[in-house]
Amino acid sequence: MRFHKAESAFFVFIAVVLAAGVLLLHAYQMLHGVAEATGAVQRAGLIGYMARLLFGAGVLLATALFFGMFFIYPLIRTQVREEGKLRAMTESLSARSQTLEYAALTDGLTGMQNRRFFDDALREYIEEFRKIDKPVGLMVLDLDHFKLVNDTHGHDVGDQVLKAVANCLKDMTRYHDVVARLGGEEFAIVTPNMDDEALTKLAERIRKAVSALTVTAGNVRIKVTTSVGLAVWDRRETAEELYRRADRQLYEAKRLGRNRICA
Image (cartoon, rainbow, N blue to C red; front, side, top):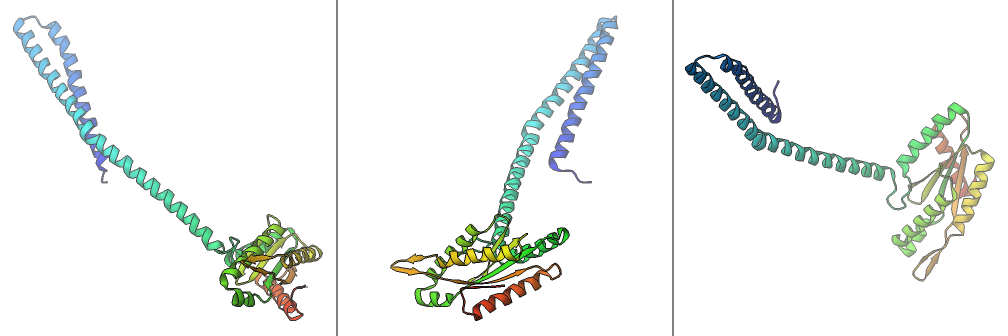
């Protein structure tokens, strides 16, 4: 097993300190020998030996201090800085990941949920509400003659209209409803625990609210209407089947003259 530089330095430091400790312990034991020595020559020899032991212990402790200050401490500081950089990098990557995830599930123009989020949410609602046998309503909306707005006034004005409609839809729905832009001028709303009658009433309020919107661009005042297709989950169909049924109702509303609800 290979050790990190800081680990190896720490082991060397401990070994030097232990060696100094052994020398000091041995010198302490020699004190008894000095006390018991009878002759001056013998006492002088023991004292000289102890002096060398203490000198050696001092050298080892000084070496350990020097080693710790000029080798171990810089290694620790370097490791701390690297860990700080790594932590900052990790936090940055995590924040970037969350931003990318948010961007992947959010419509860039309107700030509402996008098609990917809508598809996942519709499937999850159906799976969960299947367990409690409660209805899930679905509303698919398409702005009427929106291509004419873009062709006549430009895409910048068309974007303003889409943003205004998106804000209207968010204001008219509950916090747990899923409001998404599917693409272009098409929107969808998932309304959990809402039956046919309640869904129809909500759709009619939304249709009237959209038709009452006025978007001002310079000297131009633009009004739009929307066609709406509705479907309530029949407890058997998949999310894809439920969406296709609501989409067929949308096209039926278009066929019947637009600015209306079809369920």
